[in-house]
Image (cartoon, rainbow, N blue to C red; front, side, top):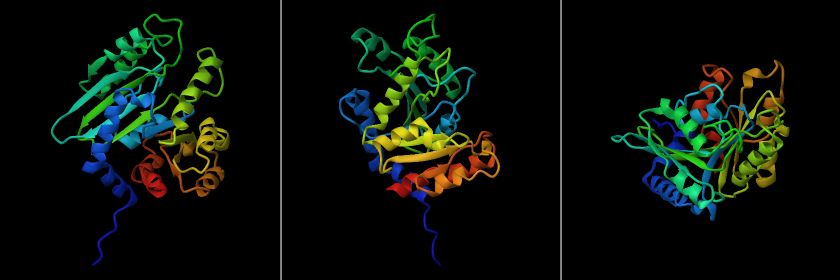
Length: 288
């Protein structure tokens, strides 16, 4: 009797959890923590897309961590999620890696930030603290300043994560300026995302909303510019339940490349979310 062949997703997970992969990931994270990534491109996995494209739901599906949501709170800086499986120890630690452009005094102040979280529900408070330290507009009496920062918030999860993985969540790309987000902010975020996407060692999870024109979304344009062969870009279509009935746009895009997979829907308990979970690493496996 033939035994079942392992699925692509299970094979990838086993590969990520091997002792060799764990050692390599730890080494890369240690080097990145010392700021070497500012000089030398390091391997990384990033989630990026337009604002409100569903990046948070994708991040939750990949990491299996239920990130808390708070009204008015959005990603204003890169957030590095570090998962380390440990069957005995449990820890959630938040630190800041300052951007190389920061003055030395400010870098030292940001480096001093360190907080141990009792559980993930404290994350919104951490984001508000970090936003104030980075002097982001609207926090800690800072009415001026930038709406975004290039410093990186690092959150390390040690425990029964069942996965050894590091993934970076980037601020959402802005389409149109408004009262809260200026033309300068639009360019700042685009340059920030471009800095990650253009590296040949970056795997890009490009999140696009199905109800928008996929071909014209900024993240797709950047991916085509810096990864024209699509060798390190994985497209994830979200909120498919918002597309008008009878639309064939999703099918046309998804069938044109093996590097597209269905992402979470607008309603997290809907069928799109459950179908996304078992195939979340499928596209990555197919591209190898």
